[in-house]
Image (cartoon, rainbow, N blue to C red; front, side, top):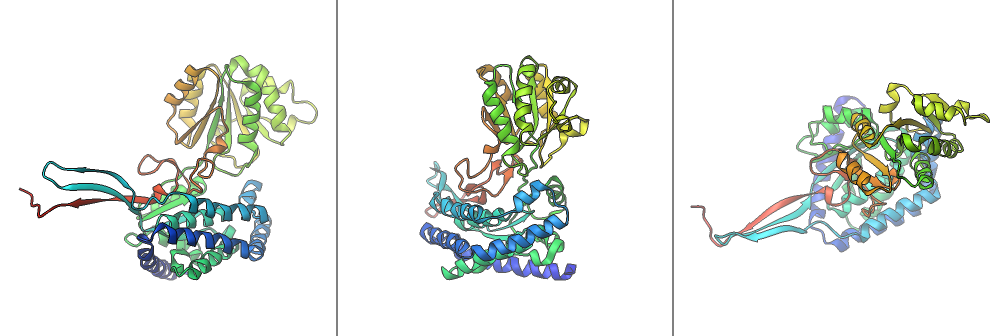
Length: 430
């Protein structure tokens, strides 16, 4: 499509979404929850078609040389699709934020004031090869009384088309406007650019993906952006850490799913336990085929234990490694003198997503927390827990690394704003 076509598609889609959203803005919870239940059923009912579409996307991805981590994020199977449908039901079970009174008071002059949660309106979402995001954002939008416009990227175009069709048919079956969930994928990249410029038609725009995508949306959009961040996540192993638990945690944080933004990318180890900890951690990580990008101190320790065909999984770190979100089975490793050096390293290289401290010393834990400036901090737990589903949100719109309106996993309340309601009795201002 050319630019004019993209502009026309996005404009028409956004206008239809605004009309559709008005019918949902004040809908009672029962109506929205019933819609989510039917949407979940529709996904299950259309499993065969969705998986066939996903298989076509995966085949194109392999042919184009897509990295394994991205292929993993793109891939669906019956189990994953069932889990995604389950997320719709989890969102249905959550309290409805719309209409909640945040605070209120009676002024000295008798005016009654209250601040109430209301939907944002029409939310745009620009994201990459993540079909689950299509469902999660639709679920959160419907529950919070919003309409959602999706631009899901060409890598997942068939998967997203099949999923959106299933969700729209469910909304229609419930007597709700199908245009509550729409896609502008047909306009390609021009559609994304047009969505960024739909100021006045789209109330907020959320980018979710790699650093390049997020930067482009933040820099080019005239629509207000809720910025999500890439995940250069760190794990610091203190001298007081339970070293066996620390081995299990770093293996989980790095290898459980490598292509996600809450996977660990850098391991920092206190010098006092490096000789004991690093060989054990490396052995476990090497069993998962993880390449360790080690600083000189870590490299010296690990060279002695890298026999048995493991040499190719140990390389010398470069300065670029400390700022890299690998999205693969690669991990940067550094030995630090103390907590202060660990904090300084993280502050110099973090993307503000998630950092973890593994320690038993309460003072170390408190000082680590005080030294961080990230959206989430894990204490003796894997970075993989920075996730809306894991933290009780049912699903998530993304992980916000900004400091305005929303920070960390974004759920239902982050899709609302507030209205001041002021009631008088013939009051006039003197």
